[in-house]
Length: 98
Image (tube, rainbow, N blue to C red; front, side, top):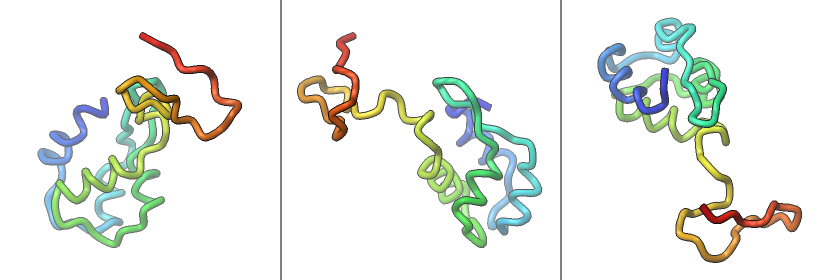
């Protein structure tokens, strides 16, 4: 599923509160597609977090979004405002203007 569809999917598909084990079983095989390509299984993200239960779709959504990897954040070290290059590594590529 597309990242942008995640919130609606959780609201419609999961009854809360729900335990971690029940949620992982219910969402088995569901993957979130990154805007830059590739996908990550929801259960993989949930297993990294290790919460015992989730009380609402808002809490679950925040947990998932807050624990997605770099493929979901857009251009690294870019704050979208232009100006100074914020990459801490001197080996970073030069800033690009679009």
